[in-house]
Image 1 (cartoon, rainbow, N blue to C red):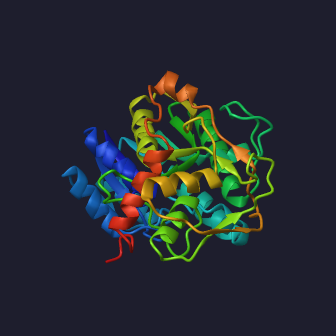
Image 2 (cartoon, rainbow, N blue to C red; image 1 turned 45 degrees about the vertical axis):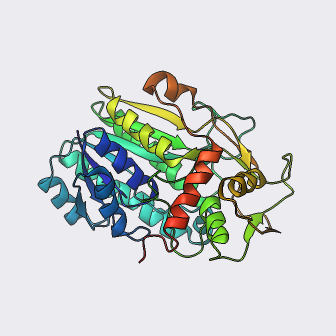
Length: 336
């Protein structure tokens, strides 16, 4: 298939492009590079030995998006493009609504104009809010605790409305948990701008000496060690989940899948596993709770296993190992 990947130079997008190309699909990337780097595209081609078409375009630009669809025979879209940090979304909510909602609306309208009605949407486990029980299943009640999650939930609802209005649309909503790790080659990985918002890139930057210590946001949650528990998933496993989703699309419909391991780890457990995998000590201090965080969330991925034939292959040790391998081989990320 010919797949348009928005945000394809980003962390999850770049790994998904590698897996798509390895499975014989053709890939076109659209990315405005606001939180990614062109070097990732070069390395996608290096890893796979295949070329990708790349457009430096903001998906809110209707004219340029229309041009991309005119120039490329697109079968389906995998949609990653968007701002993605929970804490930041609480500080600058308008930017999140303008970027994430408006960009998707423009893209969907262009897709409709060109008769492209297959989309895999990068959603998030944040749409489950503070679940009463774990593991969470796809039919659990939905709520959100932060603007980032609210954009994901709104877009899920918009996509379902699009299908209700036209049953030819194929929509797959992938609610994934906390992606960490990197490609085993060490050539692509997570390269955030500035101080990282997510746990693992923060840990790796402390381990390499770029940051003095890790802030652990809260140790008074109702968990065994007082720190938040999350379902971490290797980014390569996550990428392969997108390939399975594209290849298992039905003729019309909306399907929702959790992509996770089904196991939760606390922040302190992740630190311990990283130290064992890397041989590096990670100094940390306890900081105040972060606005928008929930205490415990991990998913039930059994539906994806049953219907897509997908399940996570890598455990927390491999995730930590590959995160460290990426960081030590690329101390400045993609920057030379």
